[in-house]
Length: 288
Image 1 (spheres, rainbow, N blue to C red):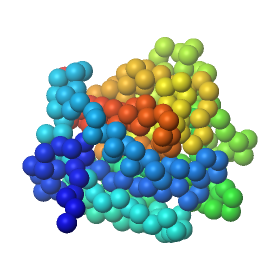
Image 2 (image 1 turned 90 degrees about the horizontal axis):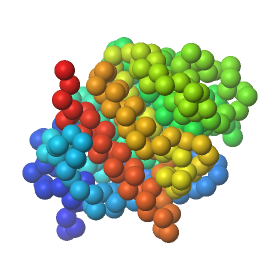
Image 3 (image 1 turned 60 degrees about the vertical axis):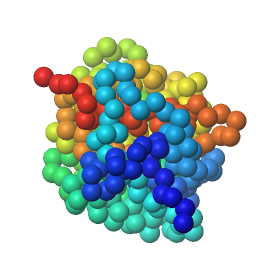
């Protein structure tokens, strides 16, 4: 019988469900991808890169894996419809939320966020979404499918404040659905030194974070489905996210749209480091 792997090869005593504070759900799914296919391979590349990551975080002087990280079997079914897949993501996310775990997800395409946000919204009151992405993803329907990756924030935007960071591409149709006061376009960020504080003020107490890897500039994260020029830098992004964790209660997050390239593994590693940073900020920051 093949031995079950743990996240980043951490010792089994830190990887059991009973002793873990954190749950990681891989969702290798890209049924609705409209340009480059392959984000279904993202979770596997992510987990492979994690095996080469140092587990000590210098910034927080911590080893957050000791809080326990339980790796859920991947949600796998390449032929399943987007609607059924979202329902499955919802059910599995809700299952672990009801066990009082800090639930995290790695995709796969951005449509999976529809399912996870439904589960978090039913579990927490006063919730807002921090959506970091190159695209607004607010279409009500795309290619005949309301559960397309380009629609990942439409349903949420009708129920919750959605604070969008790094936006630099959208269809004119989406303007009617956008929460204008909550959008921080990338070109504006370079002209406003106070944008981080302004964005955090718009978040409610309970925050779910959804990060599309294309929010980063392609110079540091080229392996994604729809790379857009002029994206976020690594340390600017971390500075902002650290402030979010310091000022709000982050209830969970997902990382989506890693599209691995066998000739370029740096993006895989960036996503792993981002994942581990977010956990370190959640559990190891010393706040006053």
